[in-house]
Image 1 (tube, one colour):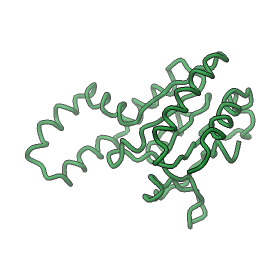
Image 2: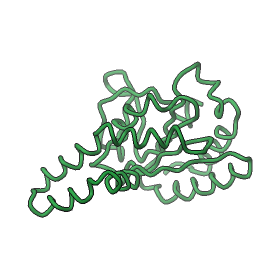
Image 3: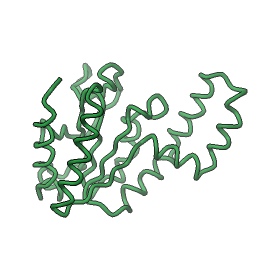
Image 4: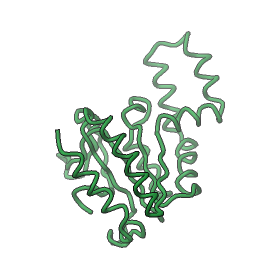
Amino acid sequence: MRDYSKDSDKLYSVMKSQAFLQSTSIGGETPTYIYAYEIEASEIVEDMLSKLEKKLALDGIRLYRFDMFEAFTSFCKEAGYLDFLLEIEAGTDKEEFLENIQGIAENSDFASFVGDKVENEDYDIFVMTGAGKAYPILRAHMLLEKLQDYIKRRPFVLFFPGEYVKSTSGGIALNLFGKLPSDGYYRAFDIIKEV
């Protein structure tokens, strides 16, 4: 397992810098960053993120932590989908039920729900977590693609349990848990290696 104390120091150094906060060091690109970590280190990373949030707060920097799975659950409650899902669950096979849930997750209304948080919450850095919990309902790469229009002014960091690597097609891939590859190209920066 890698040394997460070094990652913590690097994240703090990057996140408190004015170049990061004002997105001046990325040449006009969308301020989207990935922090990939080993799934076995999930508890270490959660603890690290909590400490990082407190440390940055002492510097006057506000993190908005957003869990993908919890957000999806809230969206389903608010939009009335939860009652629908509970109603059909007993009479639907697992595969069809999952397809229904994924259809809701891929719905542009959910992306707008998340985008509203990105645009309107009071924060300096938006941190998205929960990609592992949200699978297979939500895929982080699909949500990132839909959020591109919302991520413009402030840094957006996805804490991702897996790998962020060059794919065989030449693009960049998010491999959930280091095993489940995505098929997308990302305009995100590896916050540890590229910043």
